[in-house]
Each structure stands twice: as C-alpha cells, then as structure tokens.
Image (cartoon, rainbow, N blue to C red; front, side, top):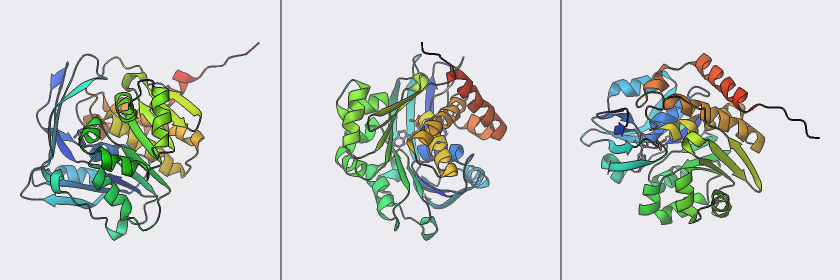
Length: 307
Ligand code: AMP
C-alpha cells in the first residue's frame, strides 16, 4: 500500500534551552517519510529542494523505501529554510525566520506512478500546493490527512478554507486549532473545525498528548512522560507519519483504528524529540518502536470495577 506525502524538505536552524544547531536537515515531508516508512512502503514523496540539499540525505530516504521521483531539484536555487527557538516550556516556540526560497514558485507535478496511492498525507506547506496535488489525483483517495500551521492561516487563509473541504482528517496543535476556529475551548474549537470540512480532527498538545474528535466522539491519548526533551522540531510531522503509516498498513480507517494510530503516532513522536533534528529517526528500528508502543499501552491501561 503506497502512501503519498507532500510537504517541505528543508534546512532548519534550531535553538532550545539545551543547545543550538546550525543548518540541519528538516522539513515536514522529511520527518513524515522517516516515520511512515517504518510501517509501509513505498512512500511516494512530493517536494522541492534547491541545489544545496545534500544528495546523501536523498539516498538515505531512498534506502528506506521513499520514492523521490516527485521531488523537484532546482539546482540554482536555495532550499526552504526555517529557524525557530524553543523555551523551557517546549510546547511554545517562536519562529525566527521563514525563507520560502524554492517553495515560492513551486508547482508540484504528480508523477503517473503516484496515481495508485490510496492514502495521502498533505504535510505542512503552501495550501495551494497541497490542493494542487490532490486535484491531480485521478481516483479519489481512501483517506486524505492534512497538517498546517499558523503561518498559512495568516498568509493563505482563503486557500486553506477551500482545501479543508476536501480533507478527511486535519492534524493541528492546540494553538492552531484555536486560531483556526476563533474558539479558546478545544471542544468548541473542534466543533467549529468539523463544520469546515474534515470528518476527523486530531489536536496535538505536545507533552500533554493528543485528542481525536469525530462527530460527538472524543478519544484522548497521553504523551510519554520523558525525562528530557531535547528538540521538539518535527514531532508533529513524525506523529503524522506514524498515524498515516499505521492506517495505511492496516487499511482500516475506522474511528477505533484511528485511536491506535494516535498511539503509534505518539510513540514515534516520543523518539523524535530525544535528539536534534532527524538524528533519532535514523537510529530506531522495529524492535525499538514495538517496545515504545508497549510502554504506551502500559501507561494507559487500567482496570476499574464500578459498584
Ligand atoms: P513540526 O515541529 O512537526 O511542526 O515541524 C517542523 C518542521 O516544519 C521543520 O523541520 C520545518 O522545516 C518545517 N516548517 C516550518 N515552518 C514551515 C512552513 N511555514 N511550512 C512548511 N513547513 C514548515
């Protein structure tokens, strides 16, 4: 079962209370691909990079079952660049710089060989680009999941609203859900967002876990209590990769299975934050992932007898 992934492949510069990185590899689609490829192959990637993006990174992704035919390389231009700073409360971050570079004029082209994808992950990026990829698909996908962020709500809200009508699942963090709905209560925000198009809404709350909303149902998943969070960059995308990876692997898009997918996504995100950038995602294997998922199951499992 192939999964189509759209999103940025980028350079990031990150500051956390524990350290600072120079330009390291990042980007929403990069993290999604690293995460999802643990569950399903191939991952068919759509993105754009400049001539500065290292071939070795492309080779590493390819070796994990990521097809790069849909990744355009603009030799004379620079890759997307993002820089951010985290504070002690790692749920909050400041964007210091966003340089669109190659992203500014990106027109995605869906290769013919990608038409068989039934699961689509529209990673964070220009809403019109996300929509263009969807419109190029000849068959309606089984499931379309989308991520976005405040930057696009501020610069491309109209396009974002149009796109929302065509997606099944929206993944956002709590502050983005509030901004999108103009509601402070997450429950009220979810009600508003579910009227905008998506049938399912996942609200990520960093170290406080994630919530899944569908019709009048809610599911709450914790985050693993970690002693040290080194760098939260990419945690949301890694979560998305695990979430869609599990759904595509099991080919089951029921609410019940989405609950499991949230646990899988949360387990993957818990690895991502342990080291800077994509470092940890490159180290982990199936045994690490299985034991981390088991830790999650133990974390939430309890028996209660009602009298
Ligand atoms: P996350 O921490 O999961 O929200 O995602 C972090 C990644 O998103 C970084 O690696 C950035 O390169 C990428 N990113 C930051 N801003 C944007 C943006 N406006 N559009 C697309 N990707 C972005």
